Length: 187
Image 1: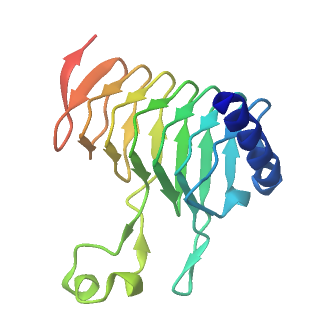
Image 2 (image 1 turned 90 degrees about the horizontal axis):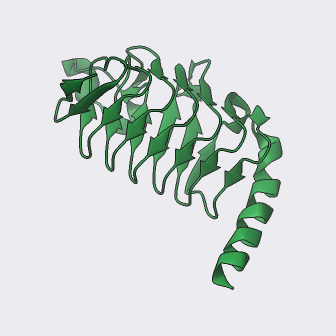
């Protein structure tokens, strides 16, 4: 009975929000209750994708008077697990069949650069800065607590181990782990 009620609640929640997105795919679901949804008009979600409860999806078109052109594209049949945070001021493109663990961060931006000028400001006053877009291929698996940082490409079929921080590109069909994430196996 609890599963039926959860299914009904998720469907109602999805219906309430799907029209706010740039594109909402057939059979996609948004789990009750997302923690933070901003800039949904810049976010596209593919067919059959499930976005779990507690997720933050944020696409920022301005911050502290600076304008951006954000884009987040999430492919089909993805599973974005609980408490993930996907945030863009530039571009994040996720292929089909992504599986994330819980608490995953995918970001193309940071609060300021590593300069004395920026670091002397409170974080809320630092200008948002992007080192480049994030691209995640098809059939990728990101373990629990993985952080994917700006300017990174993760190739098709890659696996990134739990608690890893991806600061450089990961080739297709590689297994990567660590801080920073390094390829530990290449197929």
